[in-house]
Length: 222
Image 1: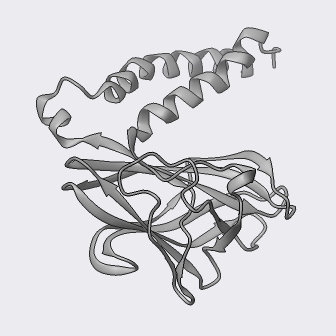
Image 2: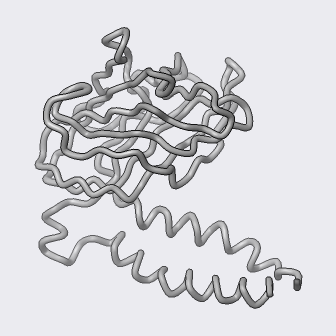
Image 3: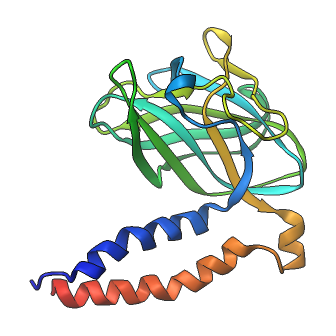
């Protein structure tokens, strides 16, 4: 096995990050960001507990993914999460649902309670929705250490989207403060016009780059 050149080692995480961003889509809704000043609590989304947060789409859209900020025990990592998008908290019309592997779980900070705060990314969804208010429901998260996973509460701190901070509910307690998350996707009007989906074009451009990078890695590994 030959040693990888330094430029290739440095380029690889950049290419992966851009490729992930291209696949997850544009920002459709953002409910604030994680910040130690907004860090009040975390609400469990596994071991029988679930959390539901509202979000607003201002245009007819296709949801392709979402990010949420999770509290995890040090060194732990979320592997999968069960999600659904519905017309009301935990129910009503189900527009999309599934149990999917997370696309990325990246460490952000260590909070005051000793938990890792990780940004968890999920993409690969395909949920077409008219403009309106919906609910993102998260539950049955699985992790490497088989421990509790919590959805970070930020009470909408730093949010800028229409409809934020979200309404939120926990399946046993009822109404709770809102959580840290965003919704990714594309505008359906852009898809129909075929001219404005920059992320799709970015994905097409980066496809050959990823193939070339894989071929280069193979030459050094073999």
